[in-house]
Structure formats: C-alpha cells, structure tokens
Image 1 (cartoon, rainbow, N blue to C red):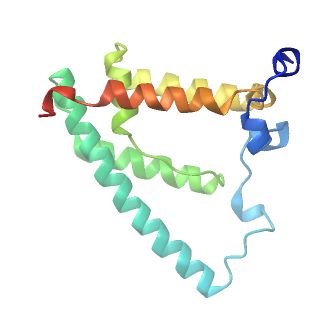
Image 2 (image 1 turned 90 degrees about the vertical axis):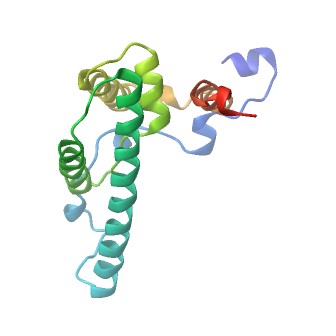
Length: 165
C-alpha cells in the first residue's frame, strides 16, 4: 500500500518468499511424501549432516552459556543445556522443522534488555511462534531492509568495541 502511494520500490519478504497459512504450522516429516528415508544413501546423508550440525550446535550453545554466565555473574549447567538442546532438536526434527541452538548475539541482546532467566528466551520463542502461526501473511509486507537494519544493530551492539586497538 505505502509503496504504491509513495511510488517507491522496496523489496519485502513476500517478494523473496511468500508466506501463507499453509506454511504456518509444521507437518510431521515422516507423513510427508517428499521425504523417502527408505533409501540408504539418503538416510546416511541425513545422519552425517545431523551429527555435524549437532556438534556445531552444542559447541555454540556452550560458548553462549559461558558469555551469558560472565554477563550475569551466574553459573549455568552445561549438561542441562546440552540435554535440553538435544530434546528440543529431536522434537523439531520430528515436526519437520529446522532445529536451533543458543546464539551468542541474541542471548547478549536478551541479557542487555533485562532478561535474566530462561523464561525470557521461552517468551521470545512463543512470540515468534504466535507471529508465524497467526500473522504469517503480514510477514510478507516486512521490508528486507528492516531485517538488515536489525541485524546491523545486533552486530553493533554485540561487538566488544573496547577490545579493538
């Protein structure tokens, strides 16, 4: 609406990849006909990639835990972190979605915004779920420049500028 009114061209998320209500909620991957894991070669590829991504996710999550521990002057439990990460990623995989891990940048932003407990991260995740599940068509109108600006602010806010010579 505003783009045509102002006679400007802004690339939006919808221009790159459209969201609709059919994309909002995940589907169980083993019920999806696009995936055939009876093929041994496919299964081997999935297992190797899964193990590689699991190692990377564990390492990044443990590094994030250390950074957050330093910022909050608390002591997190690495075993609990890895266990929760594994359970969450297995559930995500069964639902046919992409797994995840703790990201240093987002965790630093969360702590700087006042988040001190796991509930703050859980609320963010539930907020993202609500937006994707109930407002996914609105995401089509978000300018890509907005996402780039947010990412730039995260980088600028996360960087430890005092460590630069």
